[in-house]
Image (cartoon, rainbow, N blue to C red):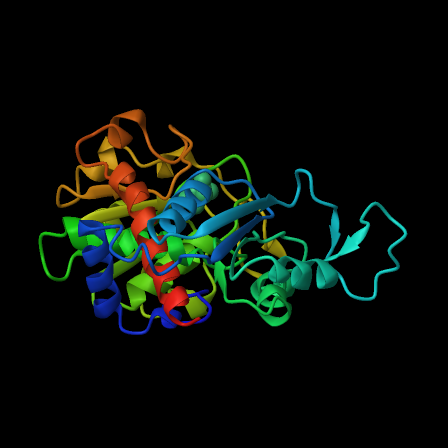
Length: 317
Ligand code: CP
């Protein structure tokens, strides 16, 4: 596997899960694989989990790690071709990318949707420029439309906690004060659709995701109905995707905040969220602190998903 941007790059999911559980038993099993190899992690946006878990994964594999925060200490980068660079950005991404590629063997990139132009976001312009011009394998640490390291960790977590072969997994929209990208829900949907789970998406009208990601999922506008019999509840906010509403907040209805009322109709469901989470907007204190909340093991599995992905990339060098 050279690049990792979506579920399809991993190939057979059962095999990927097998590798994940093997690494979970002995996370230093492949410590020789990354000897004298350098990972460069490039952040256009903030991070806690991705930064730490990916760095830990690289250390598990014996790699050296460099981290660059584009907005803290690096030159401001122009990303548009054809721009007369007489403003505040002294360097163009098209020089910066191959230069960064000179200093490392593998590149991880975090670059969120900007909500300026849906086509640019959904064409993954920044991530694809790294793939095209860096000369190095590239993996997504959350891009404009997907967060595959998170979704892989989510899948590992569901496999660990599921009590039936085909659990009911419900992804619910929940309110948030700021407009958030669709990367996590898109990606989660894409990964759930790659399993045979019973997968349901619930959100208020106007929050329909790109049909490419919804796939065969059932969409239910009544949140309580969607939650009935759920084995896993995956909460997330996202801004509108459709048409002129792209990137807008259409609804802040706090009746969608996941609380005991909704959890009571589930099959004693586990609660999941990628974190960071805004308490009492997305989920109540009581639910996130309950024994059914698995947000911490879910975050812990980020180290495992990143170790599998980096291992696969190192094996391809
Ligand atoms: N879930 C996740 O990606 O967290 P960070 O934004 O803190 O990396």
